[in-house]
Image (cartoon, rainbow, N blue to C red; front, side, top):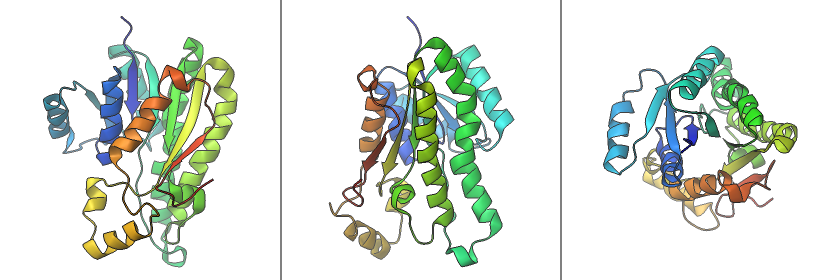
Length: 246
């Protein structure tokens, strides 16, 4: 039986974990990418194993093109061809633009946008050669609508949408789909740790009056990675509780 490999970048956080679990439930062999020296790596693997999921982790800084090349080579050599790529890695460095430092701009653009090139460039040609592949890019509601205090993040996540639509046009005749998911505020452990009054204000701004569940994003990835999603490409799927409709 052919091994179906799914590579998820920035996989050890709440959203990445939910995506990994959803794809594992679909029968994919999941490779979870994390930063070199990530202290959570062994504990994360143990937790997944306790849940019944045997996953792999590979360290690579997604801002480093050569490191991404080495990661993909190792996966293809030791585990199997990458059939699904979820570009999930992302950071925030929020500050109003007038006070934003160049390093904060560069860090967010490098991790959230340059990483799409750094990883996908090594995966998409192989998918095209094999005649099947799924590329799923995690954007954000703030990449669709913009957000004060996040010019760097909004620019990167908007760039993700342009990247998705352009690459989809290049690969649509090769059996490879490229789609984007634009989540709103999701109840990850990081978000739930926000000061209660601020969290309450965030929830109050969501028309559905609740945070999204990481599992809801995982389920959407599951669909986009499936055979049944083969006629959808270049799409942006908004999943934000009604914060933005487009």
